[in-house]
Amino acid sequence: MELSVKAVKKMAAEAARNEVLYRTLTDAGDRFVALREGGFRELADPEGLRARGRAVKERCLANMPGLLRLLEKRVTDRGGIVHWAKDASTARGIILDLVSRYGIKTVVKGKSMMTEEIALNQALVEKGIEVWETDLGEFIVQLAGEIPSHIIAPAIHMNKEEVARLFCDKLGVPYTENPEELTMVARRVLREKFLGADMGITGGNMVVAETGTLALFENEGNIRMSTSLPKVHVALIGIEKVVETWDDFSVLMTLLSRSAAGQKMPTYLSLITGPRMSDEQDGPEAFHLVLLDNGRSDILGDQVLRDSLFCLRCGACLNVCPVYKRIGGHSYGWVYSGPIGILLDSELLPPGSARDLAFACTLCGGCAEVCPVLIDHPKMILDFRRRLAEDPMWKGRQVLSRVLPMKLYSRLSVRPVFFRIAGFLARGLQAIMAPSGEWRWLPGPFAEWGARRKIPRFKRPFSRRWTALKASFEKTQRPGR
Image 1 (cartoon, rainbow, N blue to C red):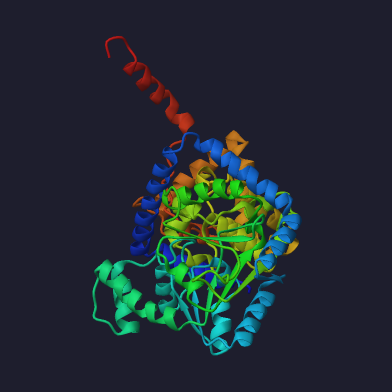
Image 2 (image 1 turned 60 degrees about the vertical axis):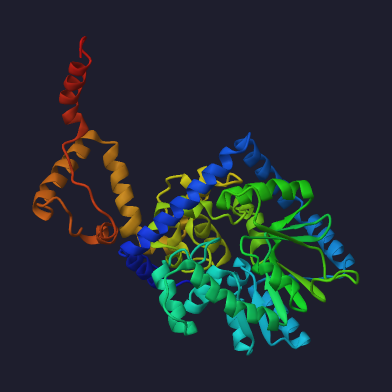
């Protein structure tokens, strides 16, 4: 897939003007932030745990080839079948072959960003397969014909009124804004689908190599029905999700649960090791594990960008990101959004497809502060910008809108006399172009930059105001004041 730069810019511009979306995302993000902070306060040494989590990911990624071979052996020993997919097309082909082999007509899916990454639903529908998302948020965006807007909360961008209208239009039920009633509507529809499904497809939060066990985290319970009721279970995971031991799993589970929703552990934790055994009552007759590379091996070899593979998909970086809260997940143009989305989209999509996303960041550093495994998102985003600046094709098209203004400012900022002259001219220009105090437009290459920002008024330079400020300060410090 290749992003349309023009389309992404248009979506971002429209979303930036949507105040309802901004309030919805801000309120939801603030709740997630509060839950995360509460969850980490309960830990004796949260920073020590984050460092341990990072060390686990570093060690497991360094030993990935051996861990993947061990995982394949353990899954095979328990009756499962492992498939290797080098890219999205291969992964879709593997799953479509399984659908054909088992004569599948209906598929129920647990929440999975990986299936979104390979556009699996569309491929299944084109083959005449009935596909149903069973996570409530995913169910909502499926009915709306959208992709998820958030890593852990797919429908975070929609308020209850929008969901009520959607259910009324698509499911033919009476209009209601009551969240409990809306949930029961979804439950009634999906319960029928669970009972009639031939195949369940899920992702996976982690997979433990030493036992070949797939771990699935959720708060609704739908994944358990997707993995136990159908006769075939297919799990699709990225190769970076493999961990070596149960001790590794314990550290990362604690970090992921608390970082995502402030929980000690997920409400539902499913641990799946192969298909149903002869002495077991629940589980599928066949279990298939699809291990997807899709560019991850190349990322692993990049000393700067490899840290993006540490991501646990907790969504914490999205919740604190001022850009994400302003424009929402769909404005990023692909499956992953927010700070980690800038990185993953730029790495996993064809070169140059997501070039503008590197500039959808204020570099405030909030994402790095909350990351459970200490990913330094701003550092990597800056590296993307550096690589773009060195790309001759990019440089030629962006010199006026991005490079020239920054070069001009850098030259002025180290030359006090010229800097004061520029400030004087700017204040004069302001009197003509913004007499009311609000800039309506900027000329030439600055137009795009100014169209999406509230530009502050130019004031007298600090050096000119310092004498009065200093005198005022000294006056307040006199004895008796």
